[in-house]
Length: 196
Image 1 (cartoon, rainbow, N blue to C red):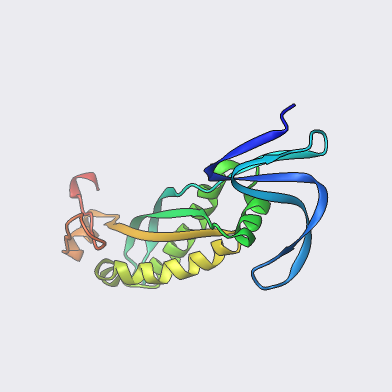
Image 2 (cartoon, one colour; image 1 turned 30 degrees about the vertical axis):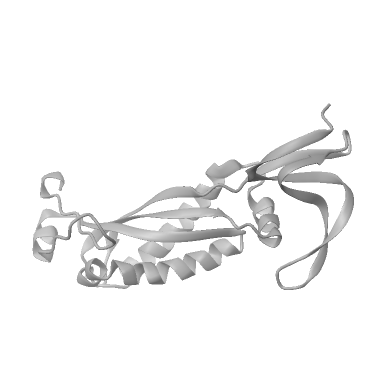
């Protein structure tokens, strides 16, 4: 039974058991918890009294896609983007993330972030005409980012969303849009008519 456990610089050890501790949250309130944190490095762990779990602090890149969304002028489109998400590095955020994701790994963090951000992507697309979506992907990101960030922050996560492309779902609609941006930069329309 090991007494000394280590964590990498991109990991937090959550050591549960032992005496309870008083922690101060971001809003200044205090509460009792039954664990302690160690960000990187090593710590002594008392056998039979304490156990160790690891929470990753890696930055995860999440591929995003919402399909068959009706815009405000009833054009059906799909939108793609990507987001970067990670557990925030301050102790109150680490505690929140531990309560939501400990033992579930980075896959759970990515899955939750994907669901939250895609929900806001769908809402942002549905509130705009197709022309507005295509011409102002950066503006759409400006709506999605703060809304998604506020939800994920309550789970101890930080995120940034980057739109990539919009694809009309039918050949006729793609031709009617009549816009084609190149694939570089934040404004891109993918109208590959051979694939429609």
